[in-house]
Length: 418
Ligand code: GTP
Image 1 (cartoon, rainbow, N blue to C red):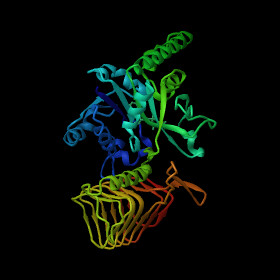
Image 2: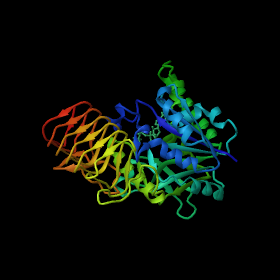
Image 3: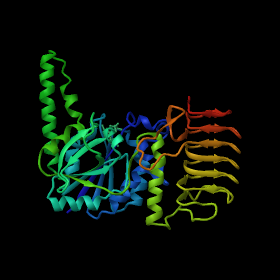
Image 4: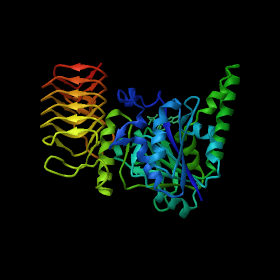
């Protein structure tokens, strides 16, 4: 029995918190641990034998995924991967409904739906097992977060022994639970009836509104936009057959540009633990503190010290005596001799001068926000240098976001440099 997967990839007008990195590359194609964010989900899907087809649904231009689809077809020969473009942002459930014929083609037995911006261990087999054991209609991935940050997410109240979902509230104003929506769902085809019912209810509401406002006829537009979280999960929780699979594995969201750094660390650690001989993973040595990924086209001086949790992209150059830790260096970056790059992202073509220092601050593994307080000011924990930025020799940059093509010639801290 075959299953399918839809990955919700969003579009150019979303993911604004990922700026300035998303100015060059869509968030879902940004490389963490040496490969695009989306590829990590595809790897997990390819490992599930019943999944044969993956549909990426979003509202980016078709050309955005052209090369990625060609490369993915080569990397995952067992998966048919296609991109379906929404004519505008239809919301996390609107696109599913709009493309329901394409999704249901071939009569898939189960449908995974994945938010492209989650970084996790993707316990898909475990979710499938729970689905069968419970004879469920829907299973949601849940993860625990600290009580203080729970209300930033969709919160799930479940029955402790059966794991049946009793309530679902998106970003509640008061605390209800620290078990949150992990952005991975498994549905049977009845999900389209639930979305259809939510759509009809929305249509009736908007018609009533139009009648009240005498003829402002934008009802159709309003009903096409549906959100999985607010419009659908809340309904599912009111019926039977909705369960939560609580993961003990790692889980993070990739929302802000800075959140690529913890995602990079988590995926590198996973790779290091599961496949120590994976291409690009550097061997531990006096100069390499694993896990470290180095693209084969990059050149790293043997006296530079790297790691842990570092990804070095294509054609990057790292000079003698440089120190790099908890960082992502994209293609064509250069870090000159004795420079230091910590808790940072260097986008394409960034140049860091000799003895310069680019630095963010550490965050705790449990922390789901990439904001830290420094001298009473809220700043990004990760230093982000957008494409083409150049940092002069001996200059220090601390907790700054630098927009593309700036030349930084004197020390800066806790600033956004435009
Ligand atoms: P918040 O997390 O609530 O702040 O909003 P968000 O837009 O960052 O994320 P949301 O939970 O709405 O989106 C989850 C995933 O769905 C992300 O990968 C988005 O890119 C994607 N997504 C959001 N809106 C749409 C949409 O209209 N169409 C499609 N196809 N995907 C979407």
